[in-house]
Image (cartoon, rainbow, N blue to C red; front, side):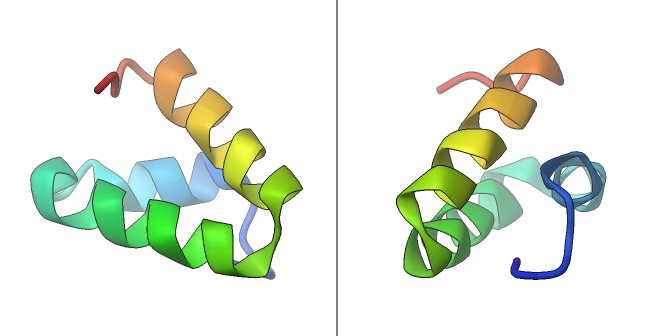
Amino acid sequence: MRIRVPEEAVRCASADPQRLVPLLLDAARGVSDARHRDLVHALRVAGFTG
């Protein structure tokens, strides 16, 4: 998560969103609050809402 842009992480999540979205969110949260917010925004833009 440190070197990936949020949009790239979202593309990865599309393979198995139910399994990968929570893992990506946890990883982003471990990096920083800002990275977590950016990923949440990218997921919403891509249509992954929860």
